[in-house]
Length: 197
Image 1 (tube, rainbow, N blue to C red):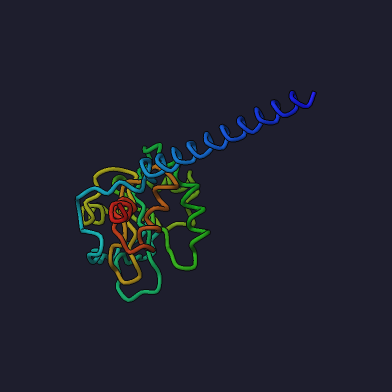
Image 2: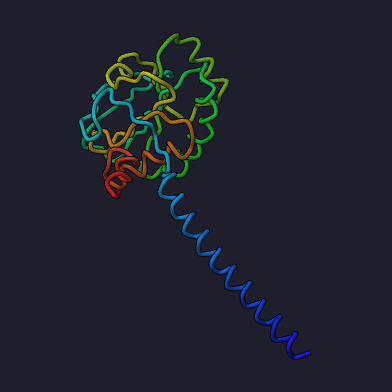
């Protein structure tokens, strides 16, 4: 009877040790996966002014008629210029995220929507999507100055009038990566990861 108890106890300890070794192996694999699958930030295209360069300073009238200055140095607030189109489904998907970002970062950030094209079409989109909380700029000059080629695209302009981060954004994570890049003082999250590697 006691021999069976000793054998079963030994078998239990062997199983516990095997599980411990398996757990350590899995933890190691998770660490390796984490290094390989780094967070994906906004996709930076090599067009337009570089991160750290002065943003083009433009005075533009918004869709509703109020004047907006883009790229003003010496201000107290940063600007997130979000380029979108009424016909872009990904842009429409990001609108609730932009509302959330505007609310959460209202202490230091102004979210500005930008596009170009037919004013009547954009005005209808502005009203239908209930974008009254955002300044909406209709300016081909702004898009050309920043070399925006694909949508949705975002440019974070610091309170000093310099471009702090930019890129093609398709999700909340990519949009928030612009803020992370600004905080870390790098052009993009990928640059930060490459520096650490």
